[in-house]
Amino acid sequence: MFGRECARAWPRPLRSRTSRQLQRLDNAIEVVPQRVAQARYVGGEFRVVSEWGGYSRPPDPCRGGLSRVFDCFGDNDSDGYMDDTGGCFTTSTSRWFFGTSYCNMFVANDMTVTAEADQGAGLSRVDLAWMWSCNEIESCMIAVFTQDSVPCEPDSFDYSGWILDFGPLSCNPGAYYYANVTQSPGAWTIPTRGTGSYLLYFVQGVTSSGDLIPATCAQPMLWGTEYGGDNQRGTQATEQFDDVATIDRTHTTSECYTYSFGLCPDPLGAMVQFWGEDGTDRVCEYANYNDDSVIDSRDFLAFLNSWNALDGTADCNCDSTINSQDVLCFLNGWNVCR
Image (cartoon, rainbow, N blue to C red; front, side):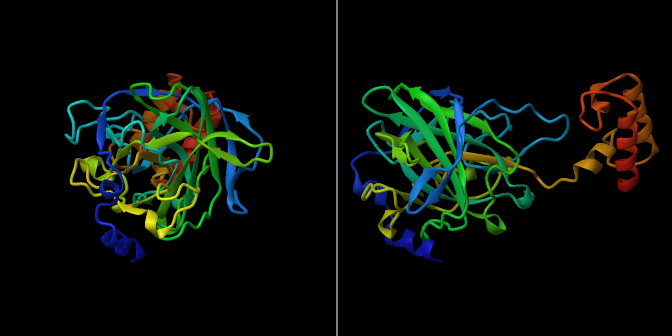
């Protein structure tokens, strides 16, 4: 595969092309987008292709919900926050980066989602972390895309994505920024057969025609999928595309670098986590109301007890009202699954 050939040709490119070394940063600052818009690669440029909309995180669904399907973020307990149960550091928020003066505004990293992921449902949430470096306070925007090609194959720009506008952020705040951003179901497309790559583009503004203006200086924080242990979600390869040899918002074969440094975790990659549907049959999961792994009359009796008590878990049709429609909803699923 071309990516493997690239890795052999550039065994330690990051250490050879710069005097900066990997450093550890312990502190994390959470930020929330002020607004979002759809973006796409059009005519050789990334562009905003929709109206901007305000951002507010959607409420959690009454049952089920999203599952982590790719974790290069380090979220072992699925709470959207950094963990270190893998034992790389003693501080859970410690992550790698290349120092505050290193600039890498356009990145493509390999991803393979979990086998359980419902590929047709797409991806509905992204968690990501980055270092924001500039001369003064600067507006921070990050465009997130998925594509079928993998590093170090040429970018294919298959799918539209979203640009997240976090507003003005302080430069080099002594910490890195992170965000948990939930969009509409299927906001990002899962690459074909579950393997491809994600693109991050760090931006400071948008022109009147919709073209994206690259940030003065930014870089993704770094982690790895191998960190997760028994709770690992997805895998990554050792290569990453970095727009650093010639900063021109494109990736060339000379910008394919190995991220295997023999550190913990190994390999490293741009710090991103995606959430989607895990493919579990949630109807039958709900029909097994007493959680004994057998769907029978005892589940129906358990549901009726909750329904009579007006327990919120008996809101089968998720309309925030408990009435006879919920009984019919439960019976329909129960009959199909038993």
